[in-house]
Image (cartoon, rainbow, N blue to C red; front, side):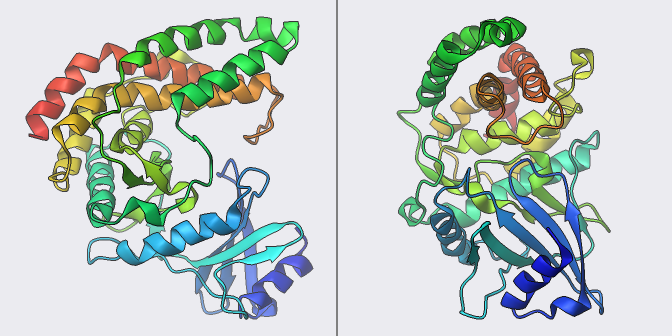
Length: 350
């Protein structure tokens, strides 16, 4: 994006484009994100929503707008979207959907952690997110990414990708493909029939939690594009895959991928602060949920690799395959901790 084109967009959000500085933030895999700073130090987040992925971007913004009023409490930081000159919360342009939100000062994110306090706070704020939404009718949110965490859907995508991939690529991914078949069999035991449908964040990796720079207290969940209906184990398992594991998502050295029992316990202790709404069936689903979520993300990365990298941004050809193998490795380590997780959950979330 040129400086001139960014300035034109900022003006549409009632900001003086000439008095602002902006710089790209590169950590996201889907949207284009910029940090915008005024002369007086006031900061904003400007994003271009990837409408190739989020084909129903207007509905996505409706989901966020319908949910945000409930995500407002003394111990949960408020996110505000700026309105356009036309009073809308987003700006539709030929190149995509743009939005501007307030930046929470003195805040930071972490990709991974070795700090039990960070793990505790991650669990606490996830529990707070769900406690604020527990009595809200899930029908206020619509499905923007159809069957996002649906195992049968991802399995069909996997089989279709296998049917169309060229022989060389299939051979390179042979180990990952074999792992995928094993996990698909294992996860057939995950029963969702007794689980309540909740409003879920659906992408609760650690770097989607905002922390205070001054005291490391968790402030709120960010990146709300995937707010949809779901099951609590979605958000639980997605958090565990980055809280209990110190390695990055595309780590190639699997010896450094770990399931840290101490971090897991700390996360549970934080979750216990806001967990009274969880049903017995939900608690029972959590150990396999911690296997399911890294696997389903790994399967999506594998499918994307087999389909020539259409979804996730990559910086080198085999990055999606590396993501897949890393996520599968953590899923395997979580599977080996299933009994340990069940015992801890019974003890700490009773």
